[in-house]
Structure formats: structure tokens, C-alpha cells
Image (cartoon, rainbow, N blue to C red; front, side, top):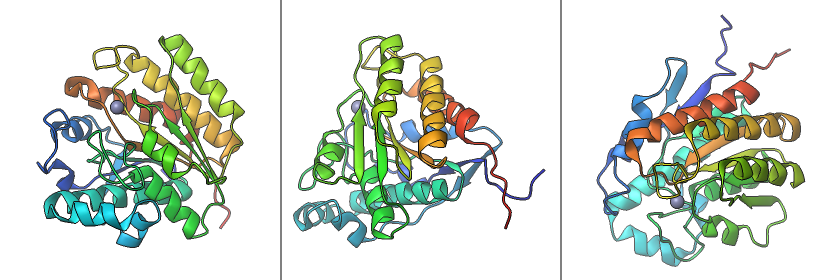
Length: 269
Ligand SMILES: [Zn+2]
């Protein structure tokens, strides 16, 4: 066995994601519990810290932060979710397939307002942090949630460094093909981030994709990352409300990613 953990799947998770902060019933703590229960023995859990407010302010207004501070528990949990996304993105740059099993989700958080169970835009905060730190020059964000990631789109609308892809297609075959084509058409980048919603699942609201399709999305995204993003790929949990199979679908995505992108890197250091 290699002494390094490069090539392992790193799961970024904090127990506070299980908190019953004010939200709607379907966006329940059972969602992250379902994923954590299904982790493989070879998946390594890492606990993140909260992001800093200046990380949020790259994507959001002071006004939104002020409004969210009114509910301290909800605010603290949201800081940890964005901090989890940052940690996952950093781990990706270190050669791991990394995934943030975070709550609350983020892709409906716009610069000045939020909706759809989201508070701050976790994936946008993470990518903006890496850009600000000079660790990446550009990024591709692939949003596979059932719902259009309006917040991410809005945050990066005038940012040439970030390409945001939202895939919508009515059947599994067309969905996989559209995902492949959209990635192929993108410019490539220093990192690929996946806004990983699972509500397109056949038993969830979208009534479309099967578990095997999430695995295939992982393979498609992973091989794109290897070919066009230097192998750097991370994901962050967005939607997905059919709790009994949410863990199954998330693990399938991770296994697909690992098959194509998670090979240990040979170091000459
Ligand atoms: Zn959704």
C-alpha cells in the first residue's frame, strides 16, 4: 500500500450538517445521514472549519449576510457548508477525488438573495476562494441538479474565468449524452466542480435518472477532469430528496469519479 492517501475519495463532512436549523421538512438532516451511512471503507472523512465572511463576500452582498445573521444556528451551519465546499476544492487540487456532504445546499443562492433551501452558494464560494488565492486560473462548474442553478449562473455571469454548465434533458440516454457534449464543448480549466443534486432520480421529483446513470455521470466528469482539468475534480451536495436511495446515488457518482479520475498520482518529490 502507498503511504499517501492520494487517489482516495475524501468526504468532507461536519456533524453540524445534521442540525435541524430552520428549513423545510424535505431538506432534512436525514439526507446527509443517508449518504454518510453508505460510505465505503476506503472513503476518508475530513472535517472542515467554517468559511470566513470575506469568502462569502466574494459572492454575496453584505445585506444577505446581515439578514442570515439574524438566525445564528442557521448562519453557523451555512458557514460550515461553504467551508466544506472550500475544503473539498482544496483537496481536489491535492490530487484527491473530494466531495462535500454538506447541508444546506447552495446553487439557488444568488448575490443578494436566496431561495430553494439554499443559504450561501457553497460551490461558488469555493471556486472564488481558489481564484482569489491564485491557486487556479479558471474553473468549470457542472450542475447536475434537477433544478437550474440560477445562483451560480448569476454569480459568475460576468466572470470569464468560470464556465457554468446546467444540463437538462428528458431521458437518461439524452442526459448522459448532453452532459458529455457540454463538457466537451467547454474550454477546460484548472478544476472541475460538480453541483451534485440527485433530485433527477427516477424515484425523486425529476423521475428520470437511475442509480447507474449517476455512476456514468461520475465516469464522464472524471475522465473530462483528467483530460482537461489536470485531474482536479470535486463535488458538493445540492438537492436530492428521496432519502432511502440518496446515499446509494451519491456513492454511485463517487465510484464513477474514482474509476476515471481517482488513480493515485505518481510523485517524484
Ligand atoms: Zn434541486
